[in-house]
Amino acid sequence: MTWQIVVALGIGSYLLRLVGLGRSGGGHRPAWADTIFSLVPAAMLAALITVQTISGDGGYTIDARLPGVAAASVTAGLGGSFVLVVIVGVLVTTALRALGMA
Image (cartoon, rainbow, N blue to C red):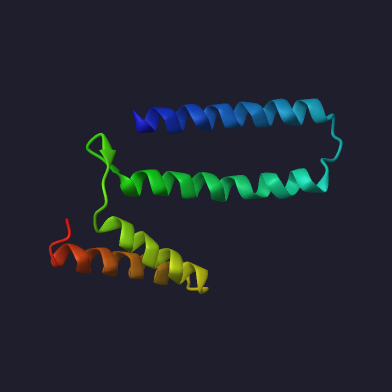
């Protein structure tokens, strides 16, 4: 069900973008609109990651994935490289699962 929603939102987003480009007539958007549009992909990715991290079995599940994502987020916020962010997230999640947090 989740993937159908993601695909539908992707198609809807693409169509809205096409409509917006067609209606603009080649004109420029205001600066505030460019700022908002530049933030939308990051917000969508964050929302998808959050849903996939805490959802499971028809409800919300708090397990080792949540601290792993939190540790990766802190690493990214401190300016870590992409590879370092992934490694930190994997190590934290693996360590918690090894300690029994399913």
